[in-house]
Structure formats: C-alpha cells, structure tokens
Length: 97
Image (tube, rainbow, N blue to C red; front, side, top):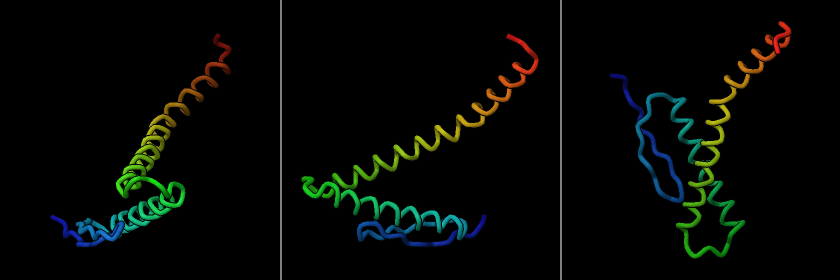
C-alpha cells in the first residue's frame, strides 16, 4: 500500500486534516480550498445582508456544484459531438442524403 501524505487545508478558519496520495493531489486540495475561500469572500461582498454565515457556505457549495456539473456535461458530450460531426462530414462527402 502506498504511503499517504498527511496535510491540512484551511477554509473559513477550519483546519481540515486530509490524507493524499501524491504532491499533485495535495496541490489540488490546496487550490480547491483557496478557491472556496475566495468564493465565500466574494459572496459576502455581493450579498452583505444575508441572515447568517450558513447562507454563504451553502451558496458557495451550490455554485461549485453547478460549475462541476456543467464542466462534466461539457467534457462528457464533446467526444460524441466531435464524432457525430466527423460522421456527418463523411456522409456528405459520399453524397448520401
């Protein structure tokens, strides 16, 4: 079994202990923590009168999930879109209607 690296990332003053497999994975977690922290701060600036802190956290989670879903859908569909485009070109070049 590979050795795990113990790391801590901090979001909103909360230190989260994690185990990662590689330095590259550690960087991804650190970058994600920074991204979340920035998003929460941006939401605080845009919506300064929300009833409590939970709203900022939930909005940040929702925004992050929406971006992830859009990215996954785009990534998943692109190979098929490209393949269909190539097939259509080939059919056109053969003169098939």
